[in-house]
Image (cartoon, rainbow, N blue to C red; front, side, top):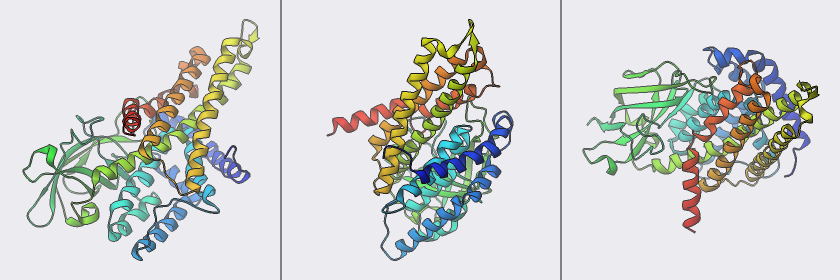
Amino acid sequence: MITWSEEQRQIRSMFRKFVESEIAPRREEFEFGDTPPYDVLRKMITTFGIGEMAKAQFFARLERERSGNDSTREGSGKGGDTMAAMRLLPIIELSRYSPGMITALGVSMGLTANAIIRHGTIAQQEKYVPELLTLEKIGAWAITEPDSGSDAFGSMKATAKPDGEGGYILNGNKTFITNGPYADTIVFICKLDEGNPPEQRKVLSFVVDGETPGLTRSKPLRKMGLHASPTGELFLEDVRVGKDRLLGETEDIPARSSAKQTFTAERTAVAAMAFGIIERCLELCTAYAKDRVQFGRPIGEFQLVQLKLAKMEVARMNVQNLVFRQIEMTEMGVTMDIAEASACKLYSAQAAMEVALEAVQLFGGNGYMAEFQVEQLCRDAKVLQIYGGTDEIQVSQIARTLLAR
């Protein structure tokens, strides 16, 4: 794939019109106010039938699972590229104005729902997944803890203790949880405490309702960027749950492997987010370079400004090619392994950050002002180098894979 198909261009145009009419005029409300993004996101997925398509795919997959003919292929044959585009194009278009919204959307419809789809029982999938795919319920995937950071499992203190009656008592504190302040359905990841040392404990995942007694949460935390993505802390104190809340209803689910799959999906999405940010920065900078006059000339006539624009275009082309690769892989039914996903995230995140910083520099004093969108995009781009695993973690993952060959 070397260019967008006409069908993909039309789909993208429709999403762009929605974003520019429904979200762009309210950018300051979402960016500098406390308005949750969920109503406008529900309107978007309803307008384009995204939720219903996702539910149809989910129920078809569930039927295959019932019949013992389940497949993990995400797309194949005719129309596969269209389905891939329907997943990636909203990410790109939302990221041009509000990367935070795609984070809130992706964690609910993507990470949370997929964790249950991959390892939940059929009954658990039927109960929780459909409403997550339509945003009727907001989802959160809770793994990070105050002292864990990149060492999510090694430093994990949250516990599940058998209650002697077939259920569990959950305790722990989670932080930096996307959708945490508003989540209806939470995948809570913790260690099984049977009196053994923490390093020997199994990692389990539970599905917890947002209104469960013993669960409290913080207000949305103040952050550098992604203001349209509510982030908070979760506190579980002696939360009692039945075995039906244990994902898969077994303690033998390889939770570490499941988390690795989740991180892989999260990392591949960064390329589309980075592409949206880069493309918008370049668009704003090109227009500004034509209109802004200094020393009697448009600044676009100065070679240093031209160099900045040229480097932005190179970054845009490279990241776009990574997006094209993802679309082709989806059409072929192939998914990236974690090392390739890490490489994809590492390059895309760094490219987005470099472009956004240069955009602020090109705008000069105006670029430092909140009135100009490059200020927001620069703040938002930084998180791409942090969440889903820092740049340093991506480097380590890539290098370990190379050295193991």
